[in-house]
Length: 96
Image 1 (spheres, helix red, strand yellow):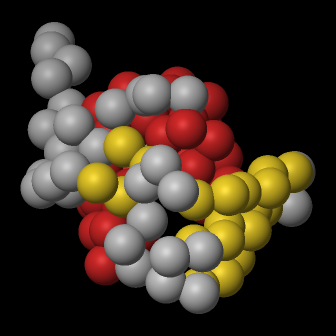
Image 2 (cartoon, helix red, strand yellow):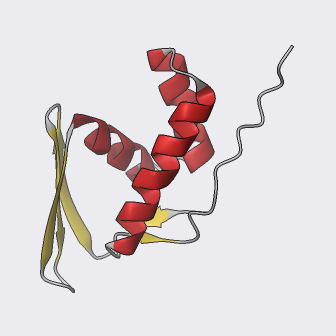
């Protein structure tokens, strides 16, 4: 399960987010969509839950959203902002 690293400080608004990593002396800025995803992570949602919410809210294709979210989460992880394994998100919604 992915989690935000505990020692981070963030400010999130409708325009995006700013994340301060005191331990590494890094500041990371995110656009509006990145801020949305960061807020969901801080609230404890899984990558799969974030994908479901984005698909529901945007109407975008689930595979496109999965790919984009996985890439974004991998980028956050490479910046030492997430703890846990990003892996590949698998959407379990049944298709009729």
